[in-house]
Length: 187
Image (cartoon, rainbow, N blue to C red; front, side):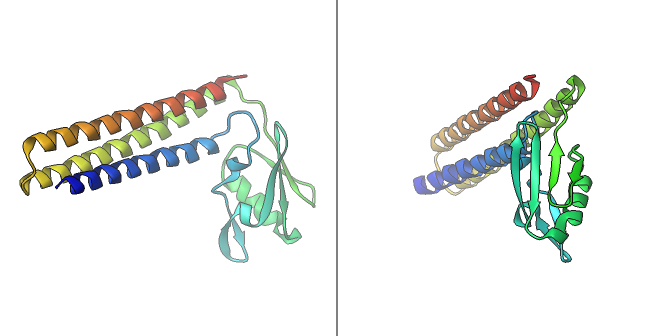
């Protein structure tokens, strides 16, 4: 029984770490005033009929604090890349000079900063819900073990451990959100 409990605890922690990793990946995509190549992660370009990630058809780099450049590996990919960036609705207008695409990040207004903070909080809420669902599933597994003969004390201790893990990871979500909000609101 104890190895089944430790297996449940390990699975719980691994799943919660995945939720945190997902949150970190989503927060990187939300711009905070500085140019960051990861802002364009998730943009799919029509590459000869098949959707392909932007970073697989072009080199994305930071020219300066407010400028991103996209250098396609094939010149005929300029139009599809430009269209994909416009359609991605990230709030940046690409400028095509025939060789590369430049994107100038406008300074964020106070209103836009608040919108971005709300978006971050929404992502944080998704992560918290995911972590709580993981907790619920783990506690259900512990209750099944209890029906199969696990002592009540051991089950209560395991549930307490799962709750402590949940609290730890929810605090981590809060910490990530606080640092991202500070980054966004810094002028």
